[in-house]
Image 1 (spheres, helix red, strand yellow):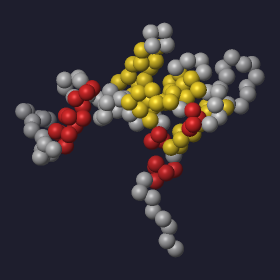
Image 2 (tube, rainbow, N blue to C red; image 1 turned 180 degrees about the vertical axis):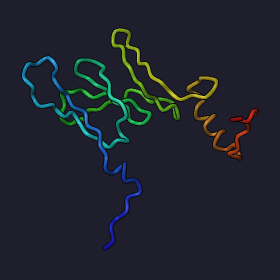
Image 3 (cartoon, rainbow, N blue to C red; image 1 turned 90 degrees about the vertical axis):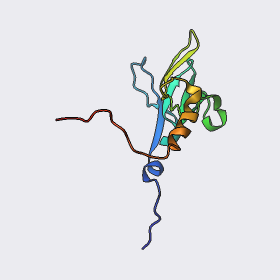
Image 4 (tube, helix red, strand yellow; image 1 turned 45 degrees about the vertical axis):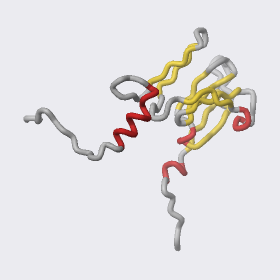
Length: 137
């Protein structure tokens, strides 16, 4: 018997779900599932307002109002992070309207130059490492 072989079992079998749960209630109502998606589609979720949350999909940030059942139709692309930055640790401060995040950059610290340095690194021609000193035990 032949079984189809998935090239990425982890991707095809895992999902992330976002639930809404009341913390101010004495009764414990069931959590409300806002949405589910494959793990590669959602890496972080954060609140923007009392009724709008945002989620990170690779290098794009989307907003979704919680009053919609069809989240796929209602999502709005807010911004795209520079390629290669891989944003994480998103935090939003609504009073100042500032989004803070951590990103991977090269030595000069410029987000805009990440794709250029990534490409140069990939085309460097070798994978050898040079050490100035050897580790002595």
